[in-house]
Amino acid sequence: MIYVAKEVSANEGVPAGQPKLRRSDIWKGLVMKAENALPFVPGMAKCNVVSRTPNGLVRDIVFRGEDARERITFHPENKVVFVRESGNVDGFIVNEVLGSDDDLRLRFSFALQLVDAPSDSTQEREFREIMERDYVKAVEATLGAIRKMVADPQYAKQRETVP
Image 1 (cartoon, rainbow, N blue to C red):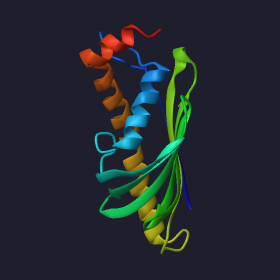
Image 2: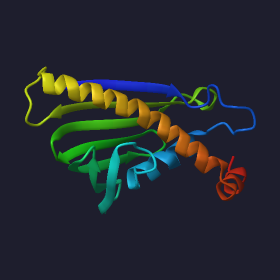
Image 3: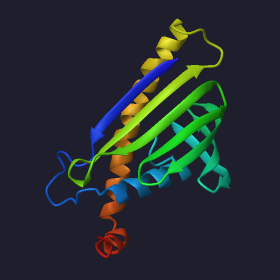
Image 4: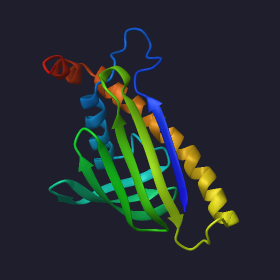
């Protein structure tokens, strides 16, 4: 099994003139990512919601050429948990919003295992390298997509009315 976590500051190094992200901005972005990950996750070619639950959804994806089904559970304003139900990989992924408004952070972590490869095999080590690289990109792409959402005049106008 492969365990990886990547945490980044949401507002560190924000260029002058760009708004700082709020917890609610990040949360809205994570929900959008769960519903349609294509703008957020490099390497994802398909993302279709197949059903909804009171606290989440089930979606079919194609990631790096492989079909999978994920059950997603929302823990509002805190985290989103993705559990692989089918595909060539078993495990789970967690996206968390951490810290206070002054020190917001976004952490992506996962525990994944290739279904047909022995633990610590060459195949699993190669998979780990790819997944680590892809998840670093996913954290950065997610924050970039959320910043783009926040910069949209429609969203910015709505955001101003909410403390």
